[in-house]
Image 1 (cartoon, rainbow, N blue to C red):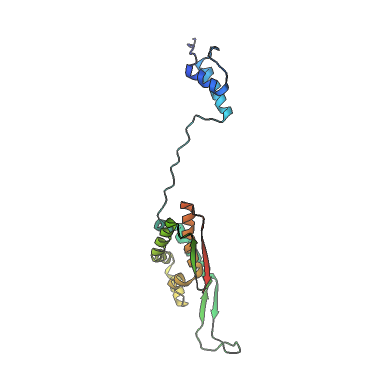
Image 2 (image 1 turned 60 degrees about the horizontal axis):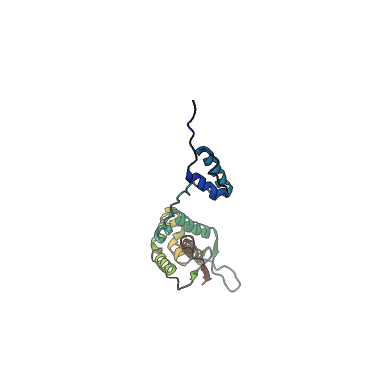
Length: 202
């Protein structure tokens, strides 16, 4: 059974002239031949007629959702866990550096008291608003971190005289970790590069 000959269309021959510089109008090409020649010409030029797949832009979470995410809470929790690993007993001693009996001993946890701050261009109103909001919700985020610990850990820290609330309020490493999360948010979602965290010991 013979297949009916289907000639190349004028649109195909015109496209071939543009793609190859050759005029195929008088060469009696079939539709299939013209299609194949066009495909080969497009492949050589790197052009693809396939539409680029649409990629939906990533939705930017508000700073509250970012800071309250499981990932952020785990980072803050890990900071406290790391601080608990660095312990030393401070006791009262006399002028000869001998321990005075029956005096209270203090447990020192981690990197000690200090503060952190975020350096940025104050003219960047977007970054300034995000930082202000992150500071406003810090108590709520701290509560989420506290709730992520077992009661035994909370009670143990309280027994040592270093309740978890005090660590969150005073510990330099915890504070700088919180601020670094804010910086990461600004860099990831708003491409703000001129922002960083600095720390100072009390």
